[in-house]
Length: 449
Image 1: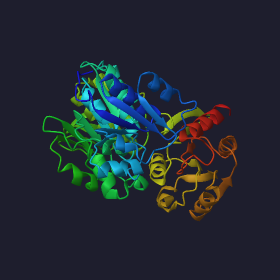
Image 2: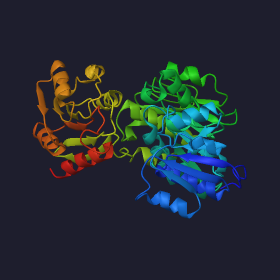
Image 3: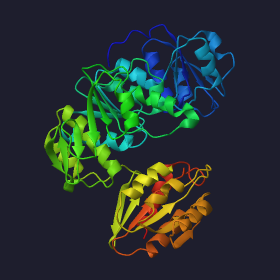
């Protein structure tokens, strides 16, 4: 960690505890700041609040007092999930108090260069692929950010010999000012999180902050097949590395039906790649480009691409049973992700789908249902999804109450060579605490067959 003195003596409010707030509060306290933590949850049973209190941090739990900012704060570090219409943040904007998320702290303290990955989809897969490439290539990577490891805690322990591979969400990026990764990756841009950002333009502007402070000595790897995304990239100062699935390009990284090319020269045969789907090929191109820029050898990259079968709950290959392959895509909490999953397979597919009813239409899935021979629907949207599947001409449509029943029924209707795919197109909160729990139950049901 760098010797950082800019926080010494500052009055800093950490808004929202959770993992990132806890780590940020401890770090800022250690750097000499006068830290106050405010969290909406009750103080009783809050171990993190108790630990911070023992260190001398002022902790306010049980709500957000209306007069909170009267204490005179110089800076707010907020939990990424807290929206900007929160009254405390509205008041902070009015008072011109800077509002950060903890990845800004990460940049301030990190001795290690940062590779930041963002995008509407594919962030976690790209981050994980790159981490494995660098790890096998002996580049001493550390994984951090939205993937589950608080980045400022990782940066605190990192040295100049490490590389931080950081998954960055729009929520995190929106709270940055000087954040500047050595390499930025922008996988794609689709409409998302409008309940948080308000408009597509504000969402895209938050994403674009991944490269906003980069200079010509930095790199920006981006999806050249998306005109909306490239319109933002054109204004960036970094050295641009495009990736594309539309055939060989003379610059950047690209792919045709058989090869991956680096600056127009064949680099790796697509025949070795285990991860299915064009959306995953985009992730592969982005991660491979970053690995090349970081000096990773060809053997390490090839090793990962020939063995990596997916991140847990994201098009994760689970098992092959009697010639039937099972895939867990529980992270597909919207139709966009399920479209990508269905497009990945040109084989008869039994689709398990449904979940929390957010009033969305499934209509944009229609062009991707051609290979689906059976739909097993569950959750709050079971009726709607079953009705939609029938309207697509799918003759076998079932509704079930549980994941175990869904898997058993799906398997009973398979033939050798079929795919059984959990890709719900809905959030999980009607039946599960999160998509991970839903995916784990699918995996357990498959293993029990």
